[in-house]
Image 1 (spheres, rainbow over the protein chains, first blue to last red):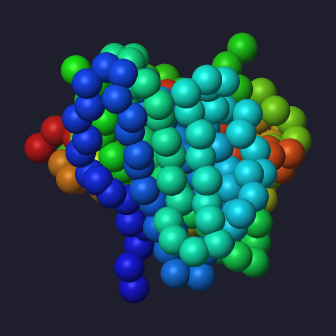
Image 2 (image 1 turned 180 degrees about the vertical axis):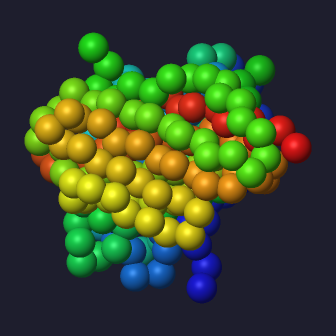
Length: 116
Length: 111
């Protein structure tokens, strides 16, 4: 019974490059959430997606960041033209299909992005 | 005012003692509350969820919710060194899909 899967676990990019982070939710889960944790800070919500829909992107920076959750395949968080301030741990969480947003969210292992 | 507030600690307790972690929140319509544990360099791991006023017990953990006073707490009985971690309080307000996290309290259990 696989949990939430994220890859890569570690990603190093130079300033100006693109970063693509992938998340596969738990089996039976159709709600995906992305959170960012900056060094020495708490978790901050970025975006909430269901299959082929962005439900809430109120936490996403206005520029360079985008997210998708296609009908087939994992959810992708894309960061274009990365800057050093993007260095953080990016966590994906998922929740069950039935309960919606109020259900418990289960977290993946995270992707640690380092921008040089 | 922050939406979810926790004392960052560190909270230090001796092995075998009760650790008490507290969290206050500002959103009166919040409905669901969660405690996560996060070891250094790892992802958050769910410990407890609580939705109704009162206490909820699970093994050595007890979550307490008081909606009138807008606080939620986590008690850890018989604390072990392996409980040393950062404990994150989170709430779901019901208006969006997001969890709102506190900064976390670092717990140190000394042998």
